[in-house]
Length: 81
Image 1 (cartoon, rainbow, N blue to C red):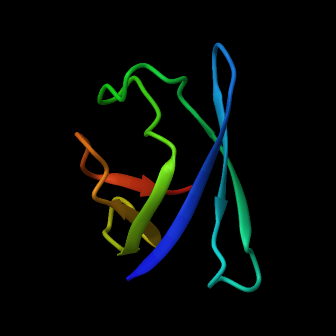
Image 2 (cartoon, helix red, strand yellow):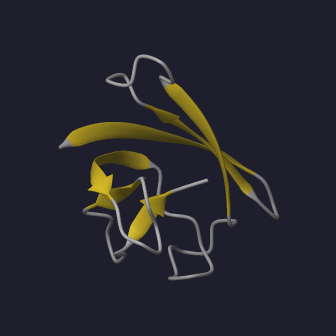
Image 3 (cartoon, one colour):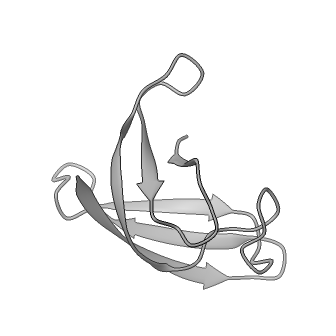
């Protein structure tokens, strides 16, 4: 199990973010573009800023991704390109 730190840079129509992955030496910072904040509603909102556990996730539909765990009110959140 790994931990990530998610920081947010909020705009009206989009949410920019930065994951800090201190354990991933070749890419310690990864920048994101997500949905705008809409009270953490499923499928229409980005997730809350915070520190999350994550684990590798590899399925036929979503190969080589990471799943974020213990997000309040949300499940199935994946880091993907």
